[in-house]
Amino acid sequence: MNTIGGQAVLEGVMMRSPSNWALAVRKPDGEIAELTRPIRSAMARHRVFRLPVIRGVIALGESLAIGFRALAISANYAAQEEGEDGETSTELSRGSLIFAFAIAIGFAIALFKVTPALITSWLPIETTGWFVVVEGLIRVAIFIAYLSVISLLPDLRRVFQYHGAEHKAINALEAGEELEPERVQKFSLIHPRCGTAFLLWVMVIAIFVFAFIGRPVWYWLIASRILLLPLIAGIAYELIRFAGKNTGSRVLMTLLAPGLWLQRLTTREPTLDQLEVSIRALKEVLRLEDSAEPAARKVEVMA
Image (cartoon, rainbow, N blue to C red):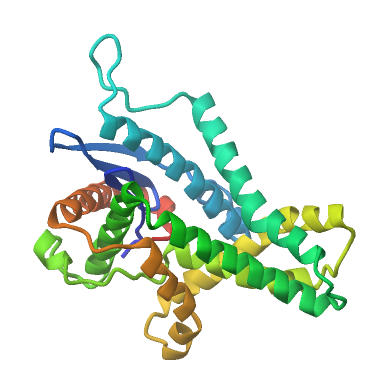
């Protein structure tokens, strides 16, 4: 079975297969809008991009690009924005998407990479080992605090419900269950390939990678935290990918437990209506995948 991943968006869910992605959004009038797009992954075209670690960097970049696009489209659907001709707008301009993407990535790097490094550099820590450990702990603390704060926002609570609906639908699919809201509702909110767990492992792996860098002057300290991010993300991708294929291993699941627990902050129990939206996106991407070319089926994505 092909690996399916997804992402919660505004009033909806995006589901992604190796060669297509599908978006389902609940509009203000109660109807479910659907939109699909093909994926032309660089990993399907070039063997070198399918090598371990490298494929993680490529997959992360593609997932971010698709996720931002799906989020922008869902925002237009949810708001029912109409143009002068009465047509509903479902696409933002490429320039707007690039600008929003750059702002979001810049904010994340500044908050989770640069800030912990600078805070730690101001502390009276002499040894490199303690420096990278304390920096890592500060980074994880900021991350957990950030998730805890945004989980209190009413609008984001609905996004977290759709996140839960996405996980439940994928868990039901992988268990071979019939994709009906009442049946899908009984499945877990937690999934080992979740992006939340991935982000936590990026931060943990960073501790070991940065230990080889030492404690350079402040400008090289910041540069190293940014430049080494693709390598760290690639390693974290391999770990999450391996975990997704070995969910029956008790030892592995114990090691991954912190990432699974953290998903409790980013998921909420969905309603049957929200599960219906998630299932609609999942069924559509499965339908498209059935007709996809075999060469495109080698790419794996996170839930």
